[in-house]
Length: 481
Image 1 (cartoon, rainbow, N blue to C red):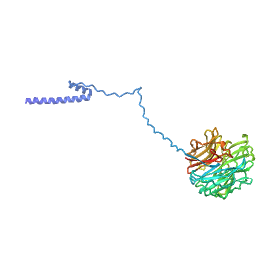
Image 2 (image 1 turned 90 degrees about the horizontal axis):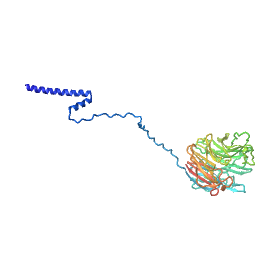
Image 3 (image 1 turned 45 degrees about the vertical axis):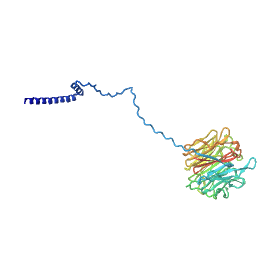
Image 4 (image 1 turned 180 degrees about the horizontal axis):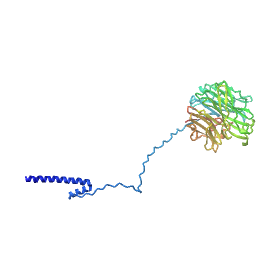
């Protein structure tokens, strides 16, 4: 009994002792981790001592430390603007002759007519012409045989052509009458094979030159679609030439109107007006432009003599608005468009109307080409040399401007530029070709080209001009923007 009691007591003591040790360890653990480690080390004297673990300190900010750069997103590359493809340009010799006038049929792409003058000399100082019309139906690849709207008669040397609806081709030029010349108009409905009887105006007395311009209203939706307009000069009075305009819807009944004189500088009562251009607008109106100089004195015996600079009050171009209702031609007072100099400017200018019925004018001024939007801005174009004889055409937002340049040794080349945004920007001027001719090679009345022009059809520009690289000849450039 005693032995069993003793044994049982020992077991109870061991259990109580173990519980006490465990309780002590728990208390020490709560008191701190260091005490636990120390207790464990004491309990196992033979264990290999381990190094005390220390937490890795976080780096403290340093004044000398280089801060990490803030990430910056890489910008996407800005796309380059899409540039229009370079225009396709071809040039061709059409025929022998001088002073070409051209027209492209807006209703039949590739159909173009050119009238050229073929001067026949009557004496050493005077001559006349037998104007010849040639037509292409394939954009200039081939041309018809010449057609002669005025027959075999020797006529004036300023023939003009214009296409109307339904394939009607109009032609205008002066014809000789008693006392001078008067304006005449004819048309063909069969591609120049036959021509209508000449209409010879009787609104104004015969004079010299006539110097006409012709245009047809080809704007779809216009109240005057098909109306033909003609502008020409005549001697209105001793104070200067008149600007006469006639219009017809059928080629039989013609109505006449006159452009009134605009205000002039005081003391300059004479107005010398020349170089007329006329163009139809989509709203059913038309515009007529012309060179004008205000003079102190002027003589009908020497019509091209403007006198010294002290005799000239101003030189420049005016534009007048033409209204036609089928019964009357009413023309408003002209607006002074731009000043210009005398050099090469009286005879050659370019007039065009855009699809907003705004008129644009191109003229030579001091060896540069000036493009003016009536009531808007103007800008000059030039390459090295003397720039002259501008031609202008507009289709939608595309503006074409062509001209000639004479370099320092007298070589003459032909240039052009295009705008695709309504005149806000233009391509750098470029040559039609590297071919050239010399001014001395065109020693003929009025030069090799006088009333040159350009027209659009089917988005293509047809630009006709005189050129003397291989004799007196007519050339045409076909430009596909």
